[in-house]
Image (cartoon, rainbow, N blue to C red; front, side, top):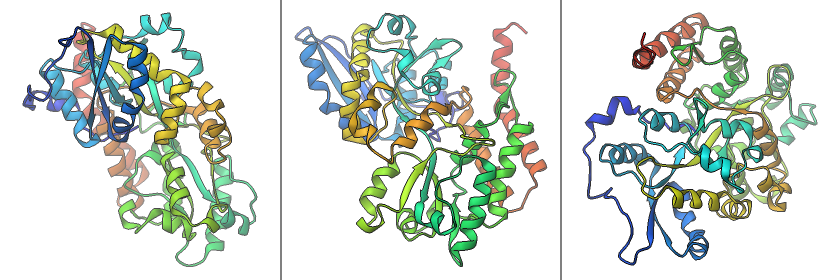
Length: 429
């Protein structure tokens, strides 16, 4: 999951430590262990309903949940780190893991996972599990997953002469052209908001060329792979298949999708529930989901979501790991999915009939077998923001593809300058 938060290396030392808010805790007066668990957004509300079972099974442990809004969570974590007052266990967006790892804030979990009968690496989707591994070590356990794939209008494809969604870029181009021609005025083949970088990143991750090179020291945006993805992305605008709009310019994405104003939309699993709630009954059989097409066949997508981490400063690491194991059980993950709609990271959990029989979720199950993590550097989210800004200029014709990829490499080099310096010192160069 990509959360646009600035790097700790830029902001850490400007944070005022609010000790009263992040005061540490240990054993309570009764002698029980009190675990501090920080969780974000809706998940922070819901997880409390699952914890009485854990506490009943572990009578010496009590869990104190603190819910954080996503907008404040990043700074709160850095404040806690600066004040040596991090929680025991925390929900962490997986693109934040490299940053907290770089600060040496996270406990390596390999020895716990290797000894666990519950947390089994081979049952997790490989790309999601990989987001939690840095330099060969495990620093988090996936809690729920997120990725991007295609939501599409089956009726608009049928009117254009297609009975199934495309599985490759050449097929997708043919379908987009036909759907656009059939749609007429003010109807488009696709909604591709210029303020959302995730679709372009997904296309770029489908390439063999990495987005960063030399161990994350430099950008690799002039590579043939990124150029191929970037040119395909821009062609969608150039041919008029998608309007040049930001999401905010669309009055209501779900209503416009229901009206058939666009036939394709790249989005995440939360929109399954939104479309089921927002579209009228007579439109519920007119939309479906499909994995992302790739250059030559079914393509990869982004490995997103949140993981459970244990902080290095915790005095209750073993108890915190017990909580990680509890929340990782397929039976608990099924209940968590029922409460939140979040997609589980384990294949065993997907065997539950509620998920296995959900026709809209099946494409996510297939897509999760083909996901790739973003580059594991603390600076990645800043680089992703630059990709979005430059891509928007290129879509408007303000810069050419050649200029855009050179600008991206230049900006990435500037952002990664401190990383190169730190790595050089570490390696004694």
